[in-house]
Amino acid sequence: MKKIFLIVLLGFILFSCSEPETPIAPSDPLVLLKYNPPVLDFYGTPKKSATNIQVNDYVKVNFEITHLEYATLFVATPEGKSATFHDLLNTDYELYIPSIIDSGKYLKVESLNLKMGDNIFYIKPLVPGTFQIKLEDKTKTYHFEAPIVFNAVKIITSSTVGVDSNCGIHKWRHRDFWFKMDGGNQTFDNLLVDKNATFTYSTNYDNDSYSGDFEVNKNLKIIKTRNKCGDYPSLPNNISSITIYKTIDNQAEPIATYYDISI
Image (cartoon, rainbow, N blue to C red; front, side, top):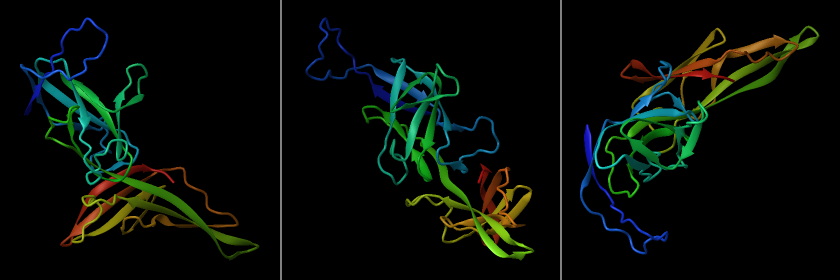
């Protein structure tokens, strides 16, 4: 549980519609704020976690304010210091809140009005990498210490075709299925990169599987080459899962499984 003391700006009651020419000086009392660290909420779906988020996913965040005095809400904005931790709003990610009017829809925002109790908002990563997003009050004076941390990757899938030898009066034709995964290019984007480890992968796709050495930003096979006489093999309708393994000292551990990958 954290505490932040925020100075309330007390405005004067004006009988004119004009704005004051000089800022109003802050005065006591203090706003007392207590909160729990932000928690990622994956809708109860066991397939999603903080390590297997993809670019353009909507990451649901629950931020609970447990105590708030002398104010009914607190206006928070992202710190947005640099791209190193992917915390630049509208460059590295976008911020959304659930729509009150249209269920299931999201409204893009630049700040958050946090009130007592649960506060739900969404982060949509625009680039791959390791995200460490911190919030602060809109005057950039007070900061929430607990960051929102998760990894996001960008997965691109494709297929290629080719013509081979004769099969009667026709030609054998083949199709290959590929994926390429980008984990980001900043200093701390190290989910898929470690000079002291080796990486491998395995897939499950259309009742078939494949495994091999993994490398970021390289076209890798999803399944074995498929062949057909006379025409190109079709694209299967099923979707794939891809698991990445990290091996250190001959100990392989799965670090992420990405589901629902279509070609």
